[in-house]
Amino acid sequence: MTDMLTHTSERDTLPTTNNRIRLAVREVRETAFRALYAAGVSSGEAGAAADTVTAMQLHARTGIDTLLDTLDRLDSSSDPTGATLSRSSAVDIVDHSPRSGLLSGPLAVDLALSQARPVLLSGIDDHEAADWYALRAASRSGTTLWLVALDDHERRATVVTAAGDMYRDVAVTFECGAESDRGTLALTAPFAANSSRPVHTAAERETRYRHAVSYGVFVDTATWSRAYALGRRFLVPEAQHD
Image: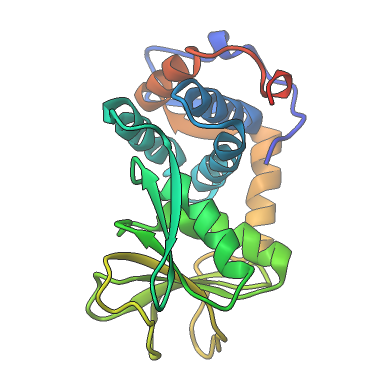
C-alpha cells in the first residue's frame, strides 16, 4: 500500500484550524506502522495491520479510527501481546491478546485460505478490519473467503472473491460448523453473486488508490493528531528494523 509520492514533512501537516487534513498515502501507512510497533506489536504484525489501516482509510474512511481503538486496547492490556492458536473438533481457533480484528485477522485469514478447515477469530464480532485484509489476501490466493459473524442470528457474512470484489450482508445458507462459538468464522466456500452487487470492486479501489496517490487522502484533524502523536513514540523508519 505504500506509494512513492513526494510529500511535505509530517510535522508541517498538522493544522489546528481545519476539520480535515490532507495526507500522502505513505504517511498514513508509516504512522500506523510506527504507532503499532511502538505499542509492542511485532514488525510483521504491524506491517500487515498498517496495510489494512491504509486500505480502510482510503476506501471506507475507518482506518485511523480502527488504529486508535486497537492502540487503546494495547495500552490498557497488562497481558503480553501476541496470538495463540488452538483446535476444536470443528475449527481452528485464533485468539489474540488483546482481542483485535486488526491484529488477529491476518493470521486467521491466511490460515483459512491455506486449508479446508474453518478458522474462528475468537471473540471478534466486528470483523471489518479482517474483511479488508481478506480482500487483498483472497485476490492473491485466487480463492473466495466468507467471514461470518456467529453472534448474528440471521447469519450474514462478508464475502471477498478472487476477483477482488467485496460483498456485505450475504445470507449464509450452509452450516458453519461452529454454531456454539462466539466470534467471526473465516472459511472458504463457493459464492454465486446472482443479483447481489459488490460494495467494493477491484477497479473502483484501483481508481481511488491512484487518485489518493496523486491528490492525497483526507483525515479528520483531531483524529490524525492523536495517531501522529502515538506514532512519534517510535521514529525510526520501518526499513531499519527486523
